[in-house]
Amino acid sequence: MPNRYLIANWKMNLPPEGMDAFLGAMEDADVAVAPPYVYLKDVVTSAPKNVLVGAQNCADQKSGAFTGEVSADMLRDCGARFVIVGHSERRNVYGESDALIARKLALAIDAGLMPVLCIGENQAQRDGGYATAFCSDQLRAAAVPQLANASEVVIAYEPVWAIGTGRNATGEMVAEIAAAIRDALGRFWPADLARRAPVLYGGSVTPDNVDDLLARGEIDGFLVGGASLDSKKFLALAGAMKTRFATQ
Ligand code: PEP
Image 1 (cartoon, rainbow, N blue to C red):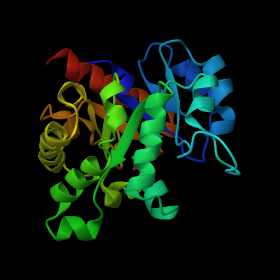
Image 2 (tube, rainbow, N blue to C red; image 1 turned 90 degrees about the vertical axis):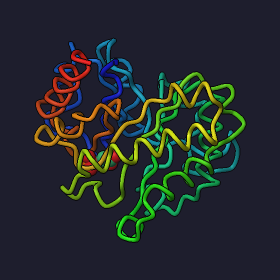
Image 3 (tube, protein in one colour; image 1 turned 180 degrees about the vertical axis):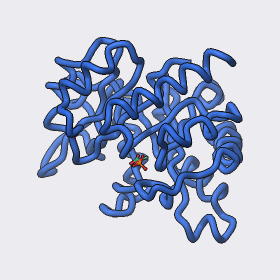
Image 4 (cartoon, protein in one colour; image 1 turned 135 degrees about the vertical axis):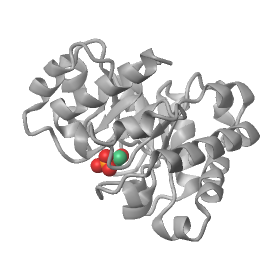
């Protein structure tokens, strides 16, 4: 399992140590980085070749009068290899619907980018016992025809209540949802893609909880916010993954 499924989502931040210092520290690690749009080309240029570079978002339209938007084709032209779609901050802060996210997913595939589709329940849905049903519904809503042409789509399970809160899901919770995700993918997505889709976890992942999250062998990596701004912490996550996947 490549460590490129360890994805840094810098959000609207940069590593305090500086991008070049951070990227220099990744020389021997197979990781992925999603900087803010305007730094994409710089990161593509300066990242070691083992670092996959992608974007945090893309437009839900191919081109036209959409002030402030950046298309999936433009991201590909800047050297991006993947794009995150449906992050909970996009869904909840900017009101992005399942239908809009499905359009982004389709355009990312058309552009030849690897989509990283984020799904996950909020606290009320978990408390009500609907976490698995909600995640399955989000996957069904994303079952666009373009999936038939995709070589790889990554699913990131990111419970909203765990993102940036310091409250991570337990390994047990993640294992339960990962099984539900694989079941839903098998029901709603093209069979071959569903079988191959890597499933990541995101939500307050740190070097202290990474081993528990990896212990059950249900997930293929992580989408990381806070801990991805510090190269030492991020390298510690990469090291934990390397050890875990080497022993499988
Ligand atoms: C994220 O924003 O995708 C994320 C997982 O953030 P954090 O690791 O800070 O919870």
